[in-house]
Image (cartoon, rainbow, N blue to C red):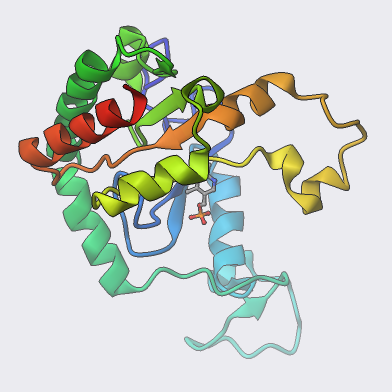
Length: 229
Ligand SMILES: *Cc1c(COP(=O)(O)O)cnc(C)c1O
């Protein structure tokens, strides 16, 4: 939800919004995503690009005198792609959409619990724990920022230690400017993005999904406490 109240995807501040429905996201269609827009011309353009650049509406055909009118007619008007979502994926997505509010409510519960239990530990900062921000967030991930240097342990060591207790962790995300594709296109020097670098050094995402049981959440808290104490 935006600061002024409207939902993300309403496009009140943009022309288009893009959603990913990858399995790690709040709702999934196994793969794929969606674009929302209030601009009917952009919507039409997206529909055409999704389907090999093909226009099926005769009213929008480019005039070609020798074209025989008929129900099979279509025109490739652009070089598009096959970005069609299958009906099966769409059915999954609709079922997920029905559960979105309940799943988000459970994410809020877990986030509040993590905030309360992990918020006062030394060498951990919860970068997203400001209450107003939590309330507006889709709560996709739960991030810790850990001062690994102060703990005298490396991040890979910490991840292994947690892994050995059955707890999967991940790093979200490697800053874009460190990725070779982007690095080669950014006119800059190492050290130009100190805030990203500082964030990245301590970032660790811990298990966070709506079907986690209270026991699993508490088990994770205990393991994080053992790690930092
Ligand atoms: C999910 C995600 C992506 C990838 O989404 P796609 O469905 O592969 O387009 C990229 N960046 C961020 C930050 C994400 O969270």
